[in-house]
Length: 119
Image (tube, rainbow, N blue to C red):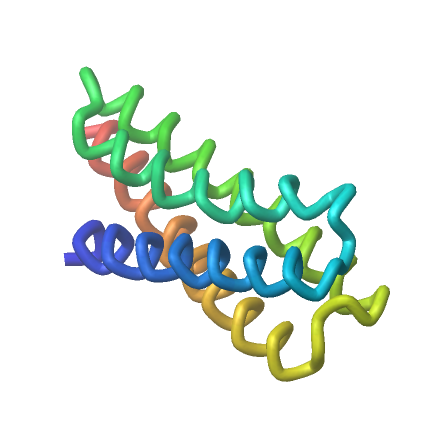
C-alpha cells in the first residue's frame, strides 16, 4: 500500500517541482541553480519507480535509499530558495510539506524492507 502511495505522491511532487521551476525560470529567479532543484525533485519519483523493477531485495532497498537521499537534497534546495527569498512562504510551505511526507514514507518503507529482508 505504501509503495503505491509513494509512486503516486512522488509523481505528483515531480510534476509540482517542474511547474515551480518553470515559474521560477519565467520570473528569472536563481537560474544558475534551478536545475539542481529540478533534478533532485524529479529524481525521487524516478528512483521509486525504478525500485518497482528491482532485481533483488537489496536492489529495491538501494533504489529507495537513493530516493531518500534525493529527497534530502530537494529539502536543502527548497530551504536555500526560501531563505534567499526566491520562494514565497506559501510556495515553500507547500513544496516542503510534500517533500517531508515523501521522506517519512521512504524512511518507513526502507525500514520495513530491511526487516523483511532479514527474514
